[in-house]
Every structure is written in structure tokens, then in C-alpha cells.
Image 1: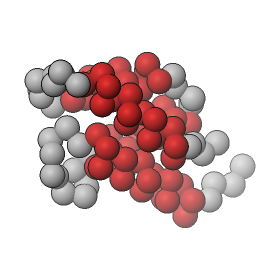
Image 2: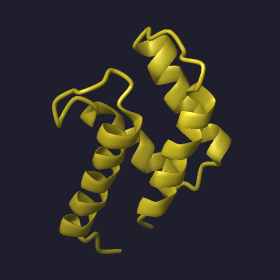
Image 3: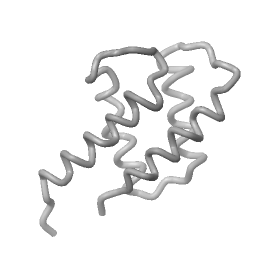
Image 4: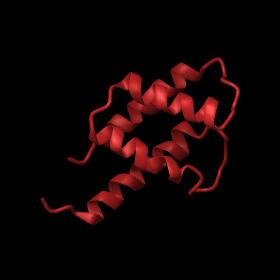
Length: 92
């Protein structure tokens, strides 16, 4: 199986954009702030993780790993982020 490296880069770039614009738990960070999370999210999308699995991972990163106190709208916001990630699609 041949991997289209440029297509993979574009796909990961789109995931990074969602994390930067729709998720952004820190607020107003640099473009590469959430780059470390792209690989895991990409793998989860590729492996067809459920919405609940994606939400649980993002919640864990935000509240446990980053130590940010959960905001009242956390679940609703994470659902919107997952919707945007789903719109990006996945690479097989």
C-alpha cells in the first residue's frame, strides 16, 4: 500500500487547524501549540474511534494532562470539536 505523504500532511494540517480553532483550551496559542496531539487524534480518526472515545481523550488531555479546570460548557464544546474533526474525515 502506497501512502500519499502530501495528502497525509494536508489531513494532519486540517486536524491541527480544528484543534487550534475549535478546541483551543488554553486560548490564543501559537499555531503549533497542539501539534503534539495531532498524531493520537489522527490515529483515532483512522481507526474509527467513537465520538465518545474522542471526547474522552480530549477531556483527559484538557483536564488531566493540561490541568485546566473544566468549564461548564466542556461536554458541549467537545462535541462540537468532534463534529469538526469528523468533517475533516480520515485517511485509510
